Length: 144
Image (cartoon, rainbow, N blue to C red; front, side):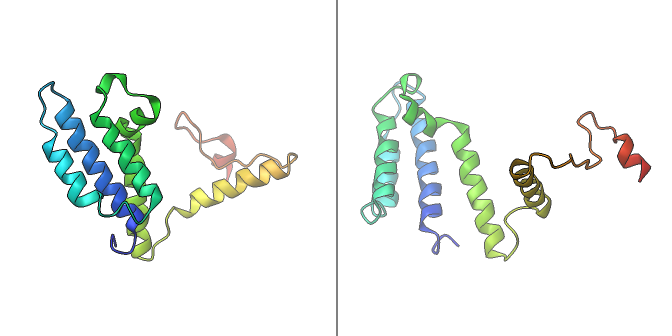
């Protein structure tokens, strides 16, 4: 799967590099040689063929130049757990796609379609799904 999706493979390797950088910069006398070796052997060979990969690698390597507590916003994004979630979502989508399953549940697509319809047709009556935030059913759903 990773052989056919170089972007996903690069994202996973970059995430691994970020974790190595996080580990070596967590202490003042941390050894960065493992992160440098990983970047040199695993990521650098992939970067020249794709300008986006090269830019991502450069940004990631910049994490070694600045203390973690004073990172600029573009670099701080790399240390944010949201990046892990984004990469995990891409991995999940790739797994589902390789198994020829849908990338998302059908209900999610239907809700998105309903939102689009409500936006395009402002007079559309509200749709009661029988769900309530506090966990109780709505009266309309109980009657059916």
